[in-house]
Length: 155
Image (cartoon, rainbow, N blue to C red):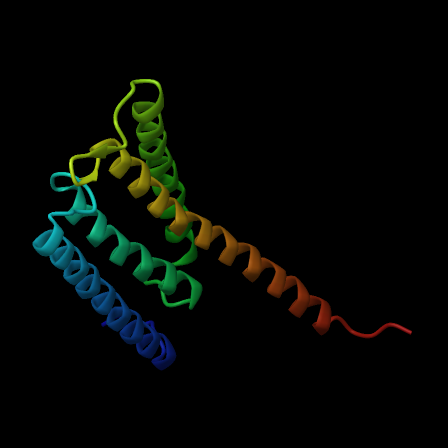
């Protein structure tokens, strides 16, 4: 465990890991039941498994960023979310292009197609970037309000 984290951050991260485990198990159970009883999968091929793990990762990362328990320092977070935001936006654009311009089907048998999976996975990870941007805006606003409150009263 990182020695720079306080007790609150350790407790928050533990709670976040618990949420992530429940989400992962729940999604695997739901897809297993749908596949077993009705032959329905979320996405075709391995994309279904990738999407389930991606949902868990996005929820975990978003919660860590929002609660201030992300293991990276602010500069590392900015770099990570800037690069990943561009990459995931590109994946979403690829999915849109495949679905619209190339005429790919949105569904494939009893699942959504790989093109739809690319679109949804890109949008899902973009949500992390949005959460990070909102958190940065909120932190900046809080710092300005705190600085304003600390200014001496001038008569």
